[in-house]
Image (tube, rainbow, N blue to C red; front, side, top):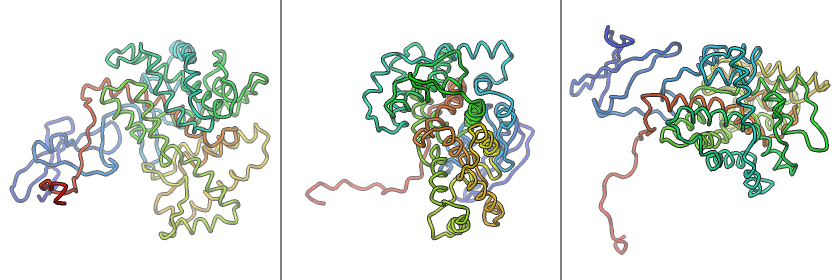
Amino acid sequence: MYIMLDTSKSSVGQSGDFVTIIDERSGKKFRLAIMRGTMGSPVVDISRLQSEMGLYTYDPGYGMTGSCSSDITFIDGEKGVLMHRGYDIGELAEQSDYLEVCYLLLNGELPARAEKESFTATIKYHTMLHDQMQYFFRGFRRDAHPMAVMVAVVGALSAFYHDSLDIQDEGQRKLASYRMIAKMPTIAAQVYKYTIGQPFVSPRNDLGYVENFLNMTFSVPAEGYRLRPAVIRALERIFILHADHEQNASTSTVRLAGSSGANPFACIAAGISSLWGPAHGGANEAVLNMLEEMQSASRVGEFIARAKDKQDPFRLMGFGHRVYKNYDPRATVLRSSMREVLSELGVEREPLFELALELEKIALQDKYFVERKLFPNVDYYSGILLRAMGFPRSMFTVLFALARTVGWVAQWREMVEDPLQRIGRPRQLYLGSPPRAFVPLDDR
């Protein structure tokens, strides 16, 4: 079948624009509506393409497919723009705090003072885990990867909190959302404590969200943890910057799992599993490995040459992004936070940070990277920053999952409440054998 695309205008429909598909052999025509959002590229509605034309689209990785409509997060990759509910991510990172951003993502508006206080109190109320979950942890080996433990523990929440599993009940959906946001820092801290053989530290509701997590992670019964303002603020920014990022792999996984009616805890566990992949949540660890292999600024040229060599599998980690074709706005915030943390900790010189700055400077002056729009992304500095705070690399993706939980929850709720929601069912281009007769075993 041969297809010709032709754009025509019409006064009918929300947008008034259509794409006309013409089968040149039969002359059959079919018009597809062009839908326009508040911002961003328009999309072609292909929902009736198969029933009218007997065709499906083919889009490996769904890079050109809009799987849903959403009013939570907007990204303009060409301009390097990221917004939550219309608010620029840079403004949120500098002027807001994580729980305020959580409220924004869940409810669509920034909270008034009374609303924020009520929301914060609700989250604090749910920070503790069911006491029997401590026995669940003991079933793991001490050297288990923290993400393996986190996936299992989050999925197991559905076995402990039966009063928030009915996704058709709005009250239960809200309760599950609050529980996930409140308990994830406790889970993350206990995952860390378990892998290093230290006793769990209970949450303290006299502390803020980030302070509480840091205290549960690094304090021990014999000695408290010194909460440093610059470290608290930097981690707050990391959480805000990772709170949501539109329809990425893990968020799409949460939506796909949720489309079947799965309970919210199972859906978030599915998202964590997707995030665990090194191409998604593990990129900042890869940046650290690359910088350590590079060792010094004197070898930057050597590694840049390798990155440009098509025969060499080496790539500059932390450069480029599936969506951003400009400087990732989140990387700018983390770079400034890095300086603040080093100053607070009294570290005069951090070799890996200095090396990262030099590599960025040289790479962004190279025509090869500029033409291909390979700019630093959020992972480029986040790993260095987390390392300076004292987090081991095995915890980097756990922290990513902690921060992203609110985005997953907000996207899940939006999906469940969408009247157009259907169970996810991607199609395929079949390339296997055509019909053939079965051959009995003795005749093969």
